Length: 122
Ligand SMILES: Nc1ncnc2c1ncn2[C@@H]1O[C@H](COP(=O)(O)OP(=O)(O)O)[C@@H](O)[C@H]1O
Ligand SMILES: [Mg+2]
Image (cartoon, protein in one colour):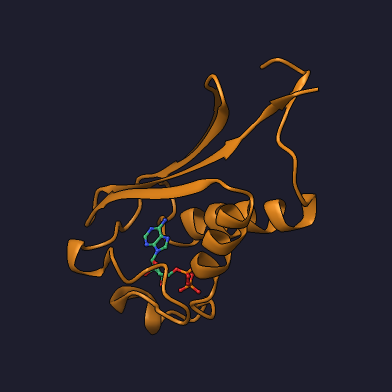
């Protein structure tokens, strides 16, 4: 990665967004599962992928997960649960930085979240 190429933004907000996504990957992946994180540079943006092979998100829930307070059916009764705010906050932060957040998932297979953020040469 070119050290002169940076993402401009609020480091506290951006790290909070990433913490939410990585925290979910850890929380929703059983012991002995894996969480992989990659960062790739494209021409005009960085792509950060957080991939896990955990419980996955059923297709009927995928459109709801970015809504404030929404928690998946399998997540609601967990003792280690969150507030259901993490992804809605992460999405707002990423969009505030003119980036994008996408998800691919299948139940019992795993999940990939991709955050793309525009970058500039300094
Ligand atoms: N990596 C993941 N694997 C499986 N389900 C996930 C993952 N990330 C998010 N989810 C689902 O999306 C829902 C919303 O996520 P989030 O807004 O962070 O709330 P929560 O506080 O429940 O973690 C979660 O309740 C969970 O059902
Ligand atoms: Mg969460």
